Image (cartoon, rainbow, N blue to C red):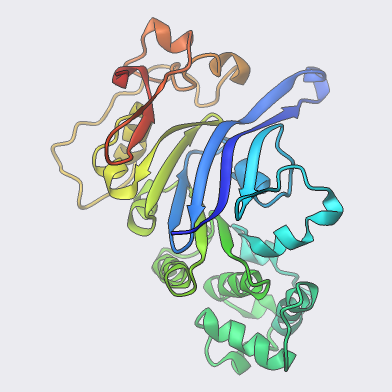
Length: 323
């Protein structure tokens, strides 16, 4: 498969304001990821872990403090704002809330025709192209939806329009930031199947950002787990979910309903500790999960754990698995 988008040791540090003026906060720490054509990679983690920040970095909505972002092998990390238009078309972001991300004052016709014009993909009849986009995301017949306002559509239909808007730019990479979490449970599966079909049929690469590791297991080819700005485990989806090695991944799986999981699996106890790191910079000096880990050792707070990789590509960063 062809590597379309790649992040290599990407870091993002942000300045704090108010009483903490002059201090810095690490939102993403040395994150590496590869998105290949036809494959779905899931990024799983809780709120505040750095998932959305990494998505903004990959779309060049923000500039990384360190590391490299490559599109089709070319370094695009520090492009000038005026030179990012081509990248915006190649890497499209699908937001969590379709009602907020779509302009409620315009009809679907206008919403989809704008990116067609902006990115130069409006060849021929513009109306026919808009209808083609609608039917590509299974809003059929397209004529029935083209003149509707977003408030006249259901949540699932609005999200499909948002997906069609992303496809209008003719991208090679889709980044879905919690793209189904605002939808009814009954239609989440249909939207995930639509994403899978787009990747398989059109060769798109996709980054699926979610807090739900169960849906990631169903939908993604690979899973990367992030906690407090740092990647802690990754590999083939089935391998990560069936044989999790990092205690945080084990906790995510135990908290997620899964009918296929053995009823004999023991629930991992949670050590005392806050859900949010008190001092992110101090925690990044060692393992960021040390304060919550029931298996924490003195070395866990002193040094970052090394990366341990098995033969099937399943890797983890935990002192419990040091070779």
